[in-house]
Image (tube, rainbow, N blue to C red; front, side, top):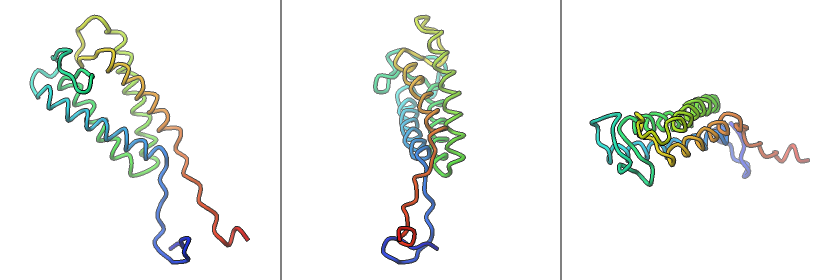
Length: 151
């Protein structure tokens, strides 16, 4: 039990970390991108697709939509604990850094299994950086001092 600012007792509410909040935001965005990607590309020809199959400027195919959906669901689940959020941040970094490198190496060839183009490759680079933020900026917000500690 803890005492709130009004002096009433209630169950202690665990504080969440910035990494947990960020993993939720990234997770929801990736889930939306994954679901929208399936709506655009359908479920056949998993590694095919063309640059015309796009969601908000990002080219998609079923394989890329599945990757985004899985990473997004893991991000939403990572919201449940600081340790999970740190692990998700590291996973997001590794996965998106690999996708970023793959996108850079296959740029211009037009032959990628994940239908990558420069906007998606850029997104993966940004998400790799965000993964590092989630993993390493996970401090809990400081507890405000109680009135007993102030006096």
